[in-house]
Image (cartoon, rainbow, N blue to C red; front, side, top):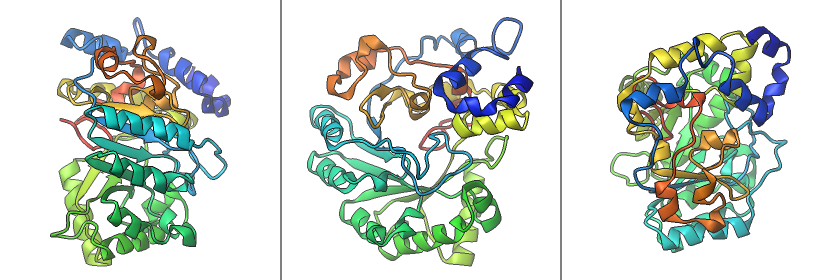
Length: 351
């Protein structure tokens, strides 16, 4: 199976092919246990929400970077973009529910032409917290983005940014040549307006993804190392470091298959399965919305086109909090990535 897929690994860019691959192959009877088989003895199947507190909105797949680990398969050539009409549906949800956090992601969310309007309107709608997942380099990509740190500050946006490592070589290998230097400059600009600085309430968090087929190290230890190195060498401050496990979907799945590391990586995830992490997976308090307004249990399910179950309503214009909080969460084998070790979510470890 692995060799045949290696020969046609480019086919894995198709969501349906990825899902078929994850659903079959090395999993099932007399093979590796499925995620369902793993959580059933814990009384966690079907997996259920706790309450919906976070609306994670992907405003488009367009990005100024092409990162090797990107589970969104984002890049400059992606044209999928959220319209203002769909954003308005999301705002109506915020106004009518107890959702306290709007988590904006992409691609590079700042490249959506209505991005700033959306942030300003979300503040008017009374959302408690707005998160923007910025790749940092977008701030320097074009003069029209140079004032983003000031815009973020004015709108009290919490900035979460990916920085694979505190040294140039590892960062550039994962994200592209020159990305580290641009990221450092962008972090300096964010610090200059108060982000991540001691005594400021402007939150600046960094995200660490492993650069290969291995699990992230201890989050607290990595945070100490990052803070020490970035302060000593670049005078950069930030609040928190989040470690996120690379999930076997999109470009990372292609990498695993191409390098014949897929089966070994999945075994690592399964062997590191942590029952305690199941309690805190992000799908239990988050709804993910794609650029077209369709709803998913998480951002990773979105990339596999696994919408929330039909009985809960599948489009944001039909958002029904009661139905969504009673739904069963759609799972597959990639879910092992969120329950390995200390667990993994968009907010870092969960156990």
